Image 1 (cartoon, rainbow, N blue to C red):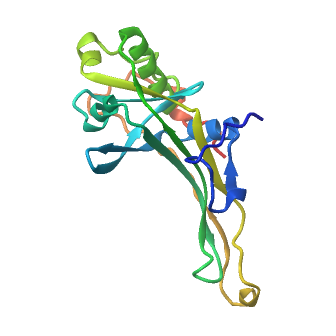
Image 2: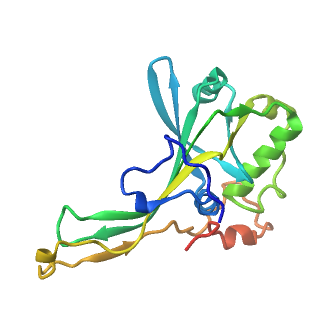
Length: 220
């Protein structure tokens, strides 16, 4: 187990027993998810934008159009925050007050750095695609120069981060235990359904195994 150093921004004050600063726990959550919410500031306005990402070693990669307001703001040198949440179940108690959600979440703080080299940018885009659907990059046409020039890619170090996790059943008040109300956990997870081919689909192209058997890394 290797813990990330705790800072004022990452220290979990509310229910600290749910906190984890273990880099393996943090990476496992990041690897199962592929959509994050990015918090950033432009002038006096704070924004939160959802976007896809990829992780490799100690880096998170984010990409988008060069005209993206979010990515343009990264050049200001201000810190951003990234949050990722996986919902594992609804926790149904006997009272309204004690209902909850089982979840795994990560929050990261830091300064994003733009990737300018075409080779490094292409590699970062590969990481993002492979993070979302492993095996796809080797089959598709790679980005051409025009597409690379229209795309901005940034990396963010996972140096200042923490995880917060809730597991287990509801915690009912003792006087509620005899109420005639169903209580327990309703598990939830992302499930890949039957793939839908494009309108221009060629009948002689078989469905790749990585699509047929798609599931998230570390998925329960």
